[in-house]
Image (cartoon, rainbow, N blue to C red; front, top):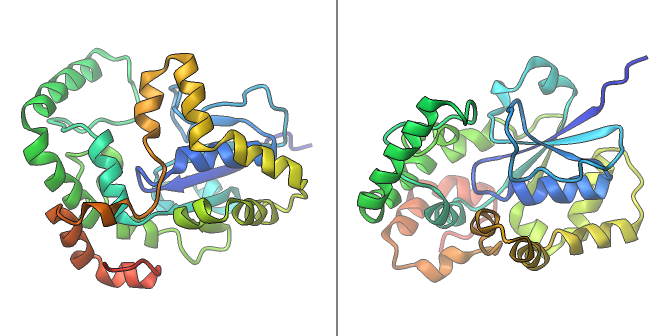
Length: 263
């Protein structure tokens, strides 16, 4: 008898909200978030290790074609789409300038630590001038200098997942506006019957305000910095940032395709 657990992969371009959706999905299903796909370190999204289930959730920034052949065919994949202008603003508060690309492996190696130290020096000296430009380049064209997972553009990442039979596409903005509807879509996609009270509890537990309070109580500044605001259309308040207008212009066809306002 096959005792392997059914894999749920929550995939997204970096800073799209995949940590939140991974935790929410896992709580709705009643299974653990086992961490980042194919990585051997403790990931920010990881929680619920005590939950017993036939399912398990993994967070991922992989492109679809970078997944294993088995995962491409058999995994339940939920892809989270977010307005790239809000990705840009979230990235300004999260990413650090890199002299060297950082991969999500071998985090305790001496080489990795030396790279991190060099990157900190660069970020401290040139973040204000260079980071917005590198973020723009990453989102529009791809830029491994920003991060390994940003080596491809937002468009290429999204297009690789859409119109596939085992992929459920959710919009970050819809998840914020109608979380119960999104959770029902997830349970239907997984062919599960989930009680409304379970969904309500999961939404409440995974809300940004409750998570923020929890991280404050735990004294975890790293998780607090990672969490940030969890809002939509923040770019409308930052219209003076030239990169916002540049992103809207460069990605106009894609914004229109996914029903995002151009201004």
